[in-house]
Amino acid sequence: MEDKTDNTPKVTGIGGIFFYSENLKETKEWYTKNLGIEINDWGSSSFDSRNINNPDEIDTLQWCAFKKGDAYFSPSKKEFMVNYRVQHIEQLVNNLKENGVTVLDEIATYDYGKFVHIMDAEGNKIELWEP
Image (tube, one colour):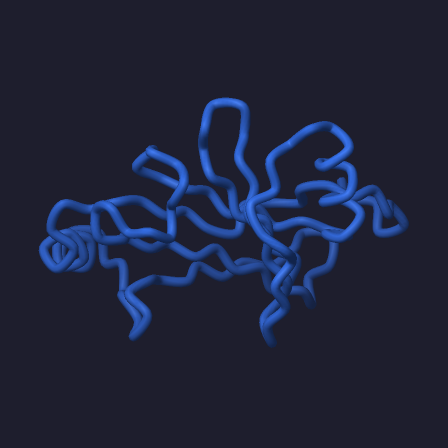
């Protein structure tokens, strides 16, 4: 159970699942036809759920296929990327830097949250998002 007074910089959930596709159009059509995943104008689908500890809060998970080789995954050579929902992103990034973690960019702020990208020990690019 999430403690609302917990100010620890950390991951609080999965924010998105992204993967490469050899044939983006066919892949999206397959997922829509066979699994009912509706693809929006940005080429992704959003799955909303309620936070069990705060039912008024709606959490969103993004699902998106990218054209194989898309630079968004760079410098990772992997065929997937996970977006983690986090709290206290600034302090988390400071902690990661202190731990020697590769932070790929500065925190970017948009209407829908703050983002930063890091690399894990296996060369996987990870997107951190504070809604």
